[in-house]
Image (cartoon, rainbow, N blue to C red; front, side, top):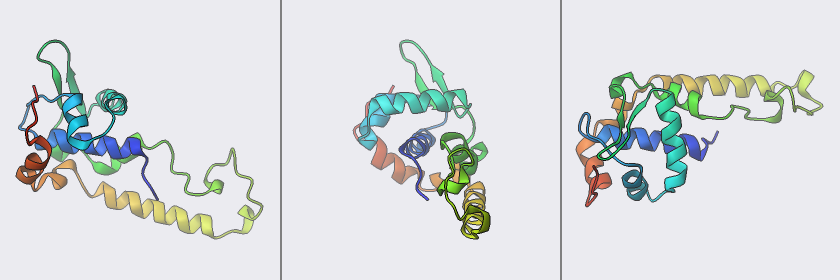
Length: 149
């Protein structure tokens, strides 16, 4: 299984913000610069993360973004579920578009479904805090010569 860029960027934004000091604001531009990824993509990602309640957006001069909850409260499995378009690993996972002729007798769908459930169960065992264990090293890599708000 491969996560979409949208989910990848969502997780990176959360890690970036989690590596900041509590309540410290950051900018989309700073995150874009740190990861070398499109500011336009990040604007969409941060908007959605804000709607989902993971981050807080402060508008106006001196504004920025920060985590809206403690890293321990951000479950990675839930983030992935919220940011992925679908989990159609193979054609037969989507009843509307499935045209595979062996679907009625194929055992592969069941095996892949169990694998997907196991995959998500592993992610459910982690919070953002688990990926911030090396917060100081992350900060050195992400904020070196950064000029955040």
